Length: 299
Image 1 (tube, rainbow, N blue to C red):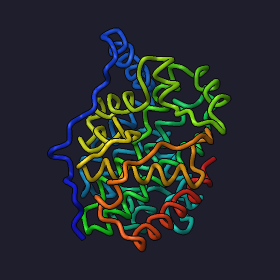
Image 2: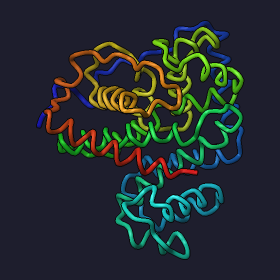
Image 3: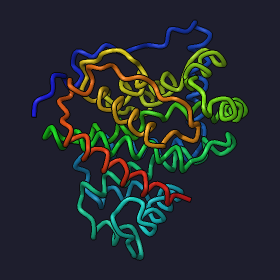
Image 4: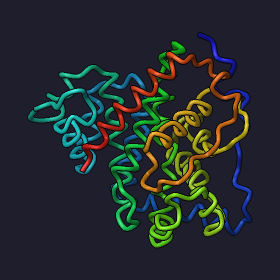
């Protein structure tokens, strides 16, 4: 199946249009997030793992173990069955990874990395880590399913889906009280989170996510899709379109990050542009539901 989109060569990045003062404030927010020892260490390890799709489980173990919080997140997730169909019992990560194929090891490590980064950043905001990850995991699963349907490598789709909302914990770390207020304003409303953010800060979680992912040397498709994943416009970028569609579907089926507000509109060209059939959409929805249910086990 060939989509009517590219993988990003002609994509024009949507940049933050705020003043220099707001741009400086945005950079400060990102630097503050990276000031967390765990966030910086985990992000550094993730950069190596994300940008090396064929990295061996042995090397992943060597990277992860020196950051105890990262290692603990993976262990807890494996034992709870968050990343695999069934819980896995083991004595150490080397033994656990030996029972899992390389591709699954890579993917679950990226998921655990997102959890490890997000946990301290969301800590004071009142936002639910579980709800944040349910949305992220579901979106990533949908993006991976699209890649499989199109017979394309799915690694970049997974990363873009997982990290498209990373700007929310980045901003919540600097403005926890604002996000507590947002949670009271948004439920049942037609207001979008990014509208409140723009009015309050001068920039949005899309902007913060893009800057954070660029600082983390994430793949271009990752930060580009994060920068405008709520846009109602057309796009000829396949990964960006996939993130928009799957994020929208996740929101519609209840993965609303706890805000329970209306979801953004999709441009009518996106689904036919990707080339999705009704059967493909059904498989995507099933994959997203499974991922959401697995993330529900997160403590």
